[in-house]
Length: 178
Image (cartoon, rainbow, N blue to C red; front, side, top):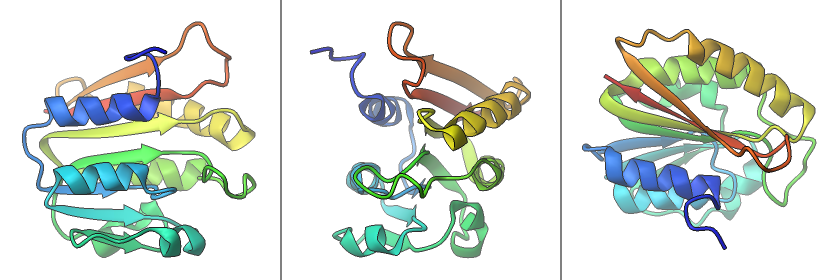
């Protein structure tokens, strides 16, 4: 089994854990099965975790420093009043859930734009894009197009993608705010 070129979520965790200096407030833009929220909870003082599917919110075993919000990630500012050190996304559908319910490119892009404004200097945003479905392909196109135009004087943007896997393999985008 590969260690580095294995699970893209683990890679995002490694980057956050090793390259982010301040770990006070974090947002998980997509709670899903709670894997990223648990990671953030173990490493940050306060975590806001967003999820549109009520069942996923109810299944999450809440922790003292986590606020689970049953609402769309494009509404960050309605719930989070402070600037944040880290924002994570796993776009696509809930693993083991209804594959017909996915993140949508319009609200995902809106959330990313809002999130970049809320991100503190030195903060990191990670975006795992799962493009194995039509909406994921649309998300990939519009998000990468937007991110490629961010000013390099303010943001560093890097994409990690598999070259020898299926074309639909997920990719990880990391944004560091100067």
